[in-house]
Image (cartoon, rainbow, N blue to C red; front, side, top):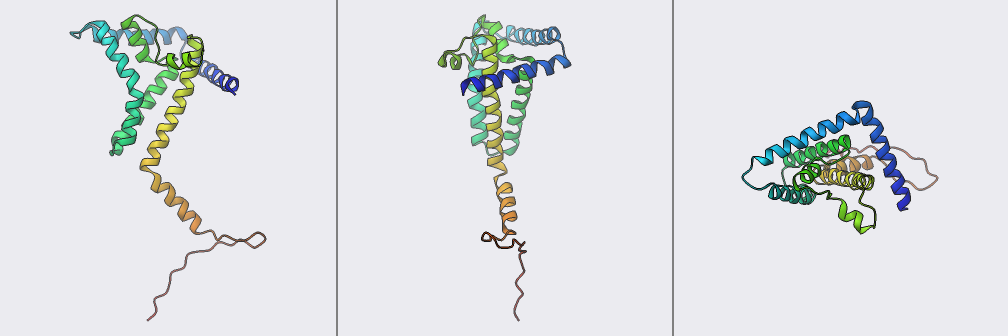
Length: 195
């Protein structure tokens, strides 16, 4: 089972690479990523705290953000804030898909000076090598599951009545019959008022 999932994720990684290669070259993509990371580093250099402290703050935010986004979607009563959260997640997902890496991980690694990735504990748990391809495949798998779960949570919270109302309306017009009987559409009739 795990080998089939691994092959599926590897196929997705290869598909992503071929699609992005048609849009932008690897060299140009690397240059744009490095410029964004360099710009982020220059912003953190201006803060009155050490770069190591800045890197640890970024890593802490990065590690807590999936749980934070989930709690916002679960507990926040504002539909607007939840839609904004979904929008942020979509931007993050497209950025990851396009650059084949998480920009926040790249920023924190450059500031701290290590190569730790948020997905490394999962790889270690399953005894996998800590290399780029394994990080990318597992990140795609978990990321896709997370995005789908967040959209399902949003629709369950804010559109559940629309969906169940549609199903009830559809089912109210269908008469249940035994096998072999002719199926006919039953239309709701208005009861006439008796005088």
